[in-house]
Amino acid sequence: MNARPGDLGVSLAMQEKLLLLATALSKAAGTILFRHGDAVLGAYLIRSGKVRLALDGVNSTFPPRILGSGSVVGLPATVAGSPYSLTAQVIEDAELAFVPRAALLECLQHDPHLCFEVMDILSGEISGTRSALKQASIPRPHKG
Image (cartoon, rainbow, N blue to C red; front, side, top):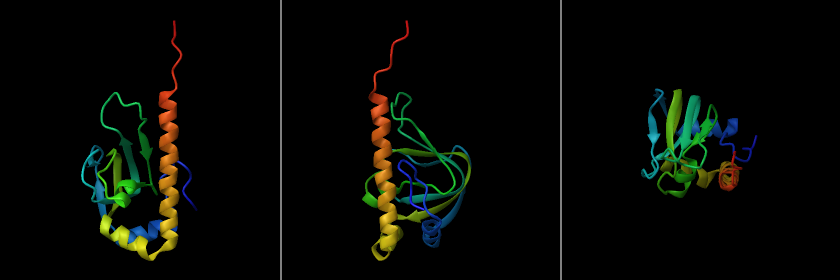
């Protein structure tokens, strides 16, 4: 299974590989995994529960995304080594697998199939972001 555009879900094979590199975590609803601008530490595989990804600020035109089981949170920043660009908050008690950046990058160097799946996920993320920005920039009709 490849990731669909805009979907951060990963194949079962990739989940198994990530779990070998990961530390299991339980997080309660309301927990912030990372904030926009935080230094990148790694990515999170959601085993159960839900995580909300959003830009900080109430007036953001970028719509939040709710991700569930089988999704990866923080992958773009983890691969790039740049600060997180969104804030991730647990909105339903969650079981997570945290994959440190160094472990993920080393695995990617040795597994071309995993590399291609990550590229699929990242390209889907770009496509989804562009669609969301396009929708946000479309003028809304005025009622009245």
